[in-house]
Image (cartoon, rainbow, N blue to C red; front, side):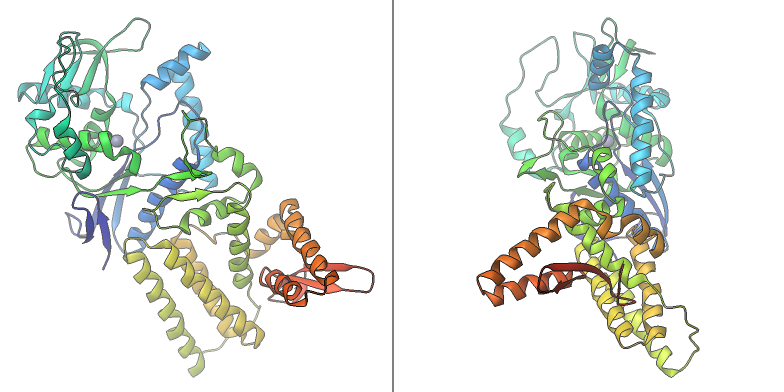
Length: 481
Ligand SMILES: [Zn+2]
């Protein structure tokens, strides 16, 4: 039984979709005015895993991830580069697809552009105006009136208290309340516009997601997701518009939010110039190690990226899983013992699903994969290859649920061999230097500790009279690569 932490009620809840086994899921997508960064990577890899796991659990998942292809930042970029808006957006959409594909993200069921849904946006704003949830301001914009919605603030609970303390705006040319938000912006000179029932203009940010959801899914969706930075005001405002428009108490049954990525203890942001682009790290790193890095922390928690160690550590972990995946070419006939190992494999499967069913606990699920890989290596050492082969098969299947272990092992090792990687070579050489230093000082315990550490990374150290050499050990064949 799947349990999901629902931001709406601030607790873990049993997951039951509205319509038997169909899951309608919407995740707020990117604004294409720049390349995608690590934060995007984390959010969209996580929701990719949600889709994979739900499908593996038997649900039919309709996954929508929109693209905000009209926005202030896009207009600003278009002015900066003196290029039309659609040239800017088409370029960054193309680049996003390249990055996401390298990261093995599934293509969403629908990837709607805001500009293709203007009619739905008009329909929703007109209805909100007719029912007095929205109003025209004197400057020609249309605003949503938060005071008209008695549930406003419910989704982003903590913020509600602050909202009560906010002062009423006295700017009579624009909105009535400081938290009122724009649904439609009157056109300014030299900006793209659409002809609406209220004249030339363009939509505000929040209305697009509500309108797209209404177009594809109708009143209520099962899961609405996004990064935690979208909870307020974006998701609060989406929720307000949609519930008022539908005269319903619920817009999304479950709200899921993934945590932030921090660099050097700071939140990553483009405005703060504290940003790592996916394409830059994809040039130097195996995409699966990026996925593994995100999976190693629970999606709700913040994650800290260290450019010197994070991906190096996850690459080593990934290598260990691929070493365990290497199979012996052997015919295995069915016997009682083999039946036993099938039951054993099933127990790992159960533990893995149990972890994932507990609000997508990927660190726990990963720890089960590593436990399984150790068991596989143990059987290989005993030359019980029927067992190790079968458990390798299970390991691959479970890894695939997380979007990893899709490569065949020979491809993985030929393109990612540890000894071909300069960074890892330097890392290993530093450890060996340290060890030699302790040996000179006759601090044998410390020297042995480093030797053990290297062995855990599949590095075997050999000392001769003149120098120390090292080898990467392929633990399956017990050969050096
Ligand atoms: Zn949205």
